[in-house]
Length: 159
Image (cartoon, rainbow, N blue to C red; front, side, top):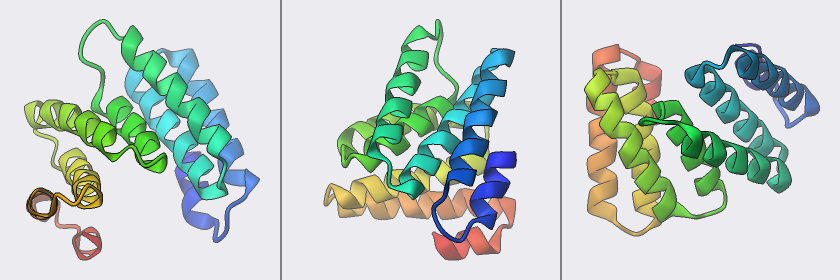
């Protein structure tokens, strides 16, 4: 949570967000909870992207991929989302979209409208980047549908 607050409060890229994300990742690793680890990895990736650090995002991408492959069952959607975020950063949009499809499958099974709204938004961005406009627009419509369940007007306006 500290990393998210640091992200929201920083108006420019800085070390504060990266440091907070690193602390979150260290604490999450100690718990062994894959959801917490996934959230922390996502924050680390986002902090690297905001700081313009390809090295940081690449390292987080590699670690996220490692954690996903070490998971005995289907990984938590946040791990797949974090990996897709890194893939998108490196313009590997097809790979990012495939990871998001896996995440959305689990999110649907969980009936998680907040997760589905985020995942479909990201999926739409990937599909538009791949010039698959119908699929991109459909994904954004799905994101709006799930977001309406949440009642988050700001997020709906962003989508």
